[in-house]
Length: 243
Image (cartoon, rainbow, N blue to C red; front, side, top):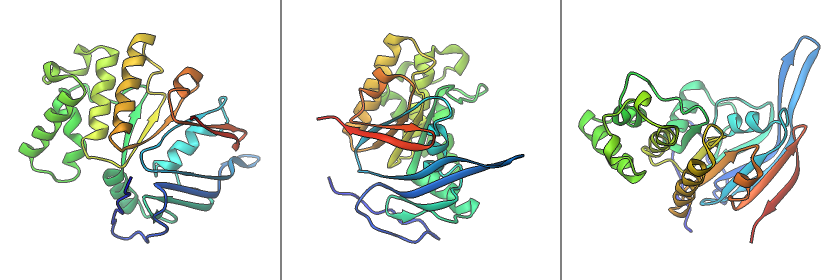
């Protein structure tokens, strides 16, 4: 699969060989008794179009890693390249622009706006791109149709089931055509049948060429991904690809 280089103003390009490249990554948080190291010397790369589960016990560092990959948290040392661009020492504006252009986010608790209908929730990232209103609405409707919610366009979150809310959240994550989808326990609040439907939807996104990184505590969910990275005390203890 050909990997397209993105061009984000203010970010220096590095090797384009992988979608995500992490080397010797370290991350700590300050505490009253000194720094608490959460990520310890992580090394891995993720190819375009790959689906990867990040698993580990509570406190293993998986959510912190997802925040770093999502440019929500800075890291202390090492390197992280996203779509061929070095992400060290980004200012807030550049980090926000990269998130909007390159990344889509899906959360366990959906993070939908209760006072907006499905179309307006999905269109929100396009507002921050200054996309004209008519085009925002057109693209949001098309994406809701893509995730099977053509009959729920004017419904608010309180009128939707858990699975439908997650479909709206996935549509919102995809409406900007990101290169990477980051999902934090996307099936954690859903029953098993609905979880299966959401995972099938995410798998179809990967089949279309998106890169998916999914944090989960559910090993059955992880087994649906092409690869599983297991963390323990901030270190990678296994990295397994499925045939």
